[in-house]
Length: 271
Length: 92
Image (cartoon, rainbow over all chains, first blue to last red):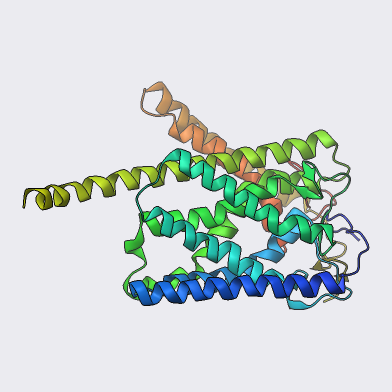
């Protein structure tokens, strides 16, 4: 029977203890983020932090798409399943998405609103986001909570983590923060509740755009290392281009905000 | 509907389907004529010193063809394999 060219995943069982520990640790961090968001709500009167955290949870609906396209395998036996569509999604994914696609976007937005943005600070922030991604993923991969697989060797892998995922994962929350920073006026009135879906939309959009070359390459039957590596390199290049464009957009908006603030500052100085 | 139970819950693709040869040829020729029309218009734009945007967009449209296998597997679109003139092969 003809089928889609999806390679067979390895045979694995969900490790019980690491799964429980991961769930507890991640939910504790979520509680800390919720407490921070509630504190911000009281201080500023805006519940945006809580809304983004909820939106990060909704973005988990993009995980099955990433899994099938990027060949990510969550072992079925012993898995605490949170929902199943194209494949089962493990429970630990929910707090991870709340933190990564909601929490990080919110923290980044608060930083942007301080209007101290510089391209250099931006790339430092990108490096921090990459490190955050690695801190979450490398231990989970080590304890075999999931794995990346392919027809042969998965390209660009360190510790079982293919580096192109740094770009697939981080562009979404950064674009989410950039949109909220540069066009906050859109999310007013009846459109205000749409913020809830922004983490999902930016994650899905960036994942598809950045991952497109490597997603295709990974599924080519009998693909050589040249093909999969070329796909991986192209994906990183697209990720870099999106990050560069986002940085320039944020920088231009920051300068605009500074210019808008100048007359008020001058008036204050004169009085 | 039967399901292939592996890692991913992909429904089985339709059995015994074959690409209809005449319809495939007619569709390919019709679309090629439209592309030729757009290409002529794009070349005219360049020749008259107006813009290269259209030619870049046409090339970009062709590159975005690499999104088709992704749409196919996510949206469950099946192009019959037997008798198909494939433009490239990744997922389907």
